[in-house]
Amino acid sequence: MSDPLGLTTQALAAIGQARTDEELEKVEVEYLGRKSGHVSRLLSNIGSLPPAEKAALGKAANDAKRAIEAALAARRAELEAARLADLAETEAIDMTFPGPPLKRGHIHVLTQVRREIETVLESLGYKVELGPEVETEWYNFEALNIPAGHPAREAWDSFYFSPELLLRAHTSPVQIRAMQRIKEPPIYIINPGRAYRRDPPEATRLPYFSQVEGLAVDKGLTVGDLKGTLLYMIQSLYGRDRKVRVRPSYFPFTEPSFEFDVSCGICGGMGCKSCRHKGWLEVGGCGMVHPQVLRNGGIDPTRWNGYAWGFGIERMAMLKHDVDDIRLFYESDLRFLEQF
Ligand code: PHE
Image (cartoon, rainbow, N blue to C red; front, side):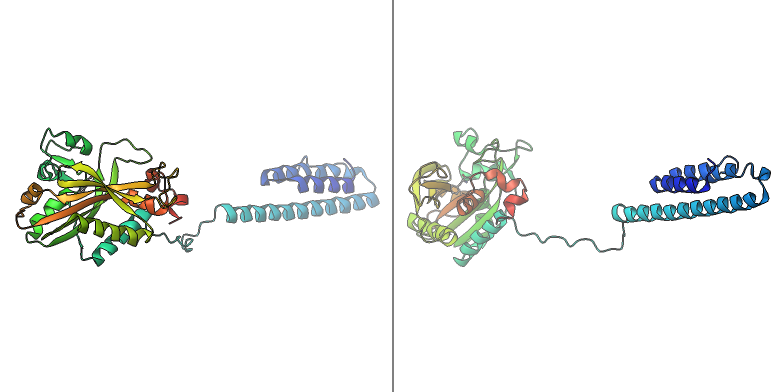
């Protein structure tokens, strides 16, 4: 390589193509290396040249060296700028910089429905009463007229901690606790809360769910009072066009006992897929409090009587929002939850 101009052109091309500091380093050594760099070699036999050519070659070699050095410096600066820009984009973390604002959440649909139920019943004079989720057998069963060995226990099979302690299978034990606490009727309470049963998860059932229990103890209460109260509650929540009905049923702690149905909001009671062509959706059980249950709560059934109900809050939310799978409430999928 004896032509300084050609050498410069070549060096500049190599510099332009270099992508890293190491590549630039190589180019630098190759062209400007003290002993075997191309520019040094250009001058290796300068001593044998005539003076005029000597000067010309010396100058040309110097120009080449300067041009290559300048190009190296420019390319280095370019690569460094790119590296910093990249770093700024991918790795710069400024701990003092305020984070993105948190999205504002809202109350879970089940809580919304529970609060609506509470508001409606509080407007009728009911008070919210709470009770423990871990119950004794006595409150969960015996006090509610379900002695050991009674076949009805199967319907409320739950999770036991010990032979004496279990996760309550319904909110009805709070009926007893409320009577024991308040002692003197009139009693008008509701108890919203969790209940647990040994049911495998399905579209209509879960091993954990919520109920709202209601209990009224007063003088001369009738099934009409019970039905009227529940009709008022249902129409306040779902609108005046909903119909309700009671069907004879059996619970050991009420007599008479009923299943309570609400007309389907999708078909208006005509029958559709959502209500399995029945026109009605079941929300829970109700009835007149069994005299023995009043006695177990410390209340004299010759002076007082009462009614009670226990509705599934998830069922009520499903009815309200036309949700067809109970599991959705507990999956924490924002696409579902953000709709309410
Ligand atoms: N405890 C009953 C259940 O869980 C519902 C119920 C409550 C029925 C009160 C009658 C009176 O199914």
